[in-house]
Length: 187
Image (cartoon, rainbow, N blue to C red; front, side, top):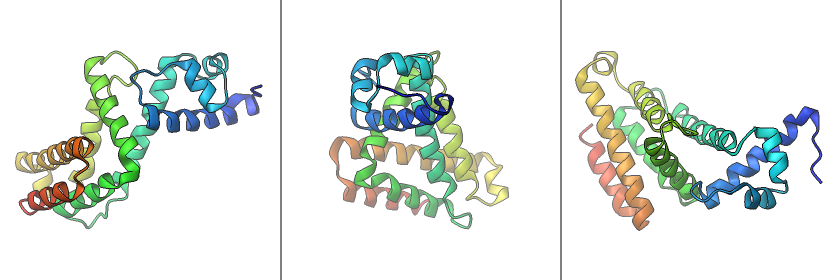
């Protein structure tokens, strides 16, 4: 039996954490409330009561994904160069324990492009903005504010996203690390 405590907020946080862990393993594509609820020790009725709808629950899970992305980006050394930031981000991304998160990021990214009016509809566009802003902090002001600075940040972001997709497809972290480090020498 589900017991709502603290007006539901403590249980809501607990279930959101569990749903996030579930989605990291199972993805969003075939997400259904009944199997999710059973896996996390709840019921579809309680999930709907606490989150309002499946779409709202998905939106909140995607907000957690965004929080993980922001945590990584805010940990970047403010004295790092653009190249050092790229290599640091890649080291974090390539860790085997991040695979579920990487799959979820790309699934959420694709969903937001395919259904911009759905839950997490701005996920892709916001992701671009978040990454570009974090990378901008690694550039000197005169470069940061130039078209060339934006092009450099975009090249880093595109390289990292491509490397992540390749990593998920091949699991060849050594080859991709060499490629990212090679590209970083030009930034």
